[in-house]
Image 1: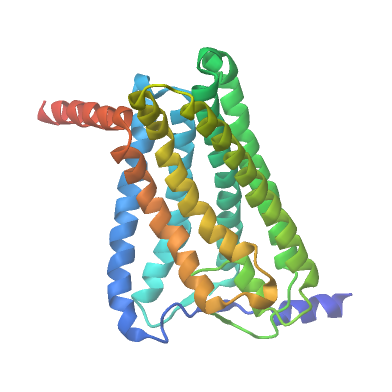
Image 2 (image 1 turned 30 degrees about the horizontal axis):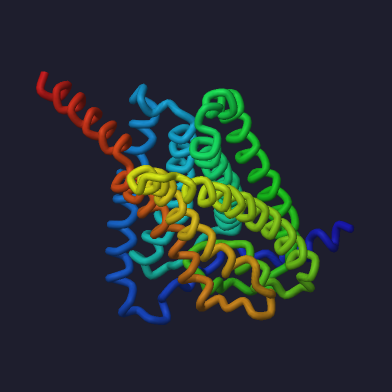
Length: 318
């Protein structure tokens, strides 16, 4: 047993080389600038959403409770991956330690699965607001919102824990080069030199559950919403109802389409070359766009931001 453990530990590299676009060195400078600007925008945008949802009393409704958690998730998403990418692109040594890699894909999967359920909870909130407006305050009460948020975070953690337990047992036989910008479970499974049937099957089942079940609930909610909205007689009423849902639908599309492509395809057809750019999209582009989508399409958020900036300006002038 001791010999087996020692052999297993010897198969684990101390560091992984994150290839990124080092095979295309001309891409690194412009990509570095894009990532840096996107990261700054994602930080500022999501921090602003979190602040206004917490500080403005007019945004203490269930919708903005979920939006605050979504912004916090996006903030953590980018912070988990982008600083490491920027460091690697700015240096000739493009490595990450084995422990750092494990922590990175553990947190990344935790956040991803949590976001799936938060987006489903937001769709439920929109369904109740439009289809059951008179009972909205009774159904979407504060304890229920807190319970939905807790379920999202705990179930996401459980999925991540299962993935980590299986992935850390994989031997890599000295393989160190990850054709990716950061550590992710599909790339780790692809790199292993062992039989990964159990890992592939577990990843497929868990991701299908965390992606397809919330997505089905979202589509069902919007099916009922569309049916209810089409019954509204005035065009202004229909426009207002669709306006409250359009931002969420755009965010759902930006999040789910890359996730479905990445995680719900057969392992044999998984392409690391395509996968790394799709991973880059939903790890930085989507979290950067989300706060602007909600801000530009939401009068309440824009009003809260103006009030926050006005209070900040008055405080600074004292």
